Amino acid sequence: MESTLPTILSGLNWPHPGLRWIPFDQIDQLRCFYGELFDLLGMWPRRTQSRIVFRKPVLTLRAYASNRNDGPVVLIIPAPIKRSYIWDLAPEASVVQQFVRNDISVYLAQWEQPGVDEQTYGLAEYADQLLLDCLHAIEKETGQRRIFLVGHSLGGTLAAIFSTLHPERLAGLILAGAPLHFGPKVDPLSSLVAASPCASSLNAMAGSVPGSVLDLASILAAPATFGYFRWMDWLVSLPNAQTLETHLRVERWTGDEMPLARRFFEEVVEWLYREDRFMRGTLKLDGLRATPESARVPLLCIVERQSAVAPPESVRPFYKAVRSRQKRWLWYEGDIGVSLQHVGMLVGRTAHQFLWPDVVRWIRQHAKSH
Image (cartoon, rainbow, N blue to C red):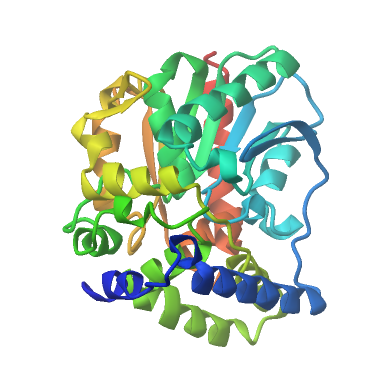
């Protein structure tokens, strides 16, 4: 495992540097075609009606109506490596619907494909400037300066970083399966990064980093999580039509690739996974230091016990460092019919029966104190 990814990447030696991504771009296209085959089976996402608040390079801010204008407001931060509709996959598997049904105003930061001019976007844009733009727009619409930030996976990492830079803008922080502390002894992907060349060695390659590069890295780092267990989940889902439908919708989502801006990819790999700057307190964005101790906000962490992406050891240091007495830890115990347990906390049946109603109560409780 330790030498496979570097060997694959270094072997792509076409004469023109800009051609080196071609095999991965082609894989991205094949995976999109794979997703379109699921559409023919009716497995497309059944999304909630929304409106666009604004569009900016790499981000579209969407709003979802609630029955009340004076209730809590949440901003959802998806992981920028896949499409954001995993938060709104189908009515019975939608965190967006959970919030809307409980009179919580929902905004979603929908990440978009970076263009040529956005290849220089890094963590300063993704974890600070663009999210601050979202909060300004939300305040203009709702009059609420302090909102709840909700993030999953790498989206949760971005939300956590933002909370350390602007704690005064948040009523609470909810992190679901978000990796925050990194290292070879913490998670498999950090081990793979440690054995790979610096991400800056990919700068000669033109354009965005294809999503299939990240998929390959995930499979090499945790083959059971991203391979074997997905097939097993399909088998155990077969007897139940609704469970199988959710599994297939998630599979359709896995083929919907999202390329990353080259600088953002490099900074995530080097600054976070290799150097662990965030938890070490050495991460600086536009001159501001992002230290976990600065996140003086109510905190709710949702953690999967056996996660290969965000294991408990990756979350605990941040949880302990946050200077707030209002902290809570929720375990996600897994579901059948979610394909990837890492996204099960967003789409799983038991997650929507027990986990997200608990999150809604937590939001309401902390909204009253503001």
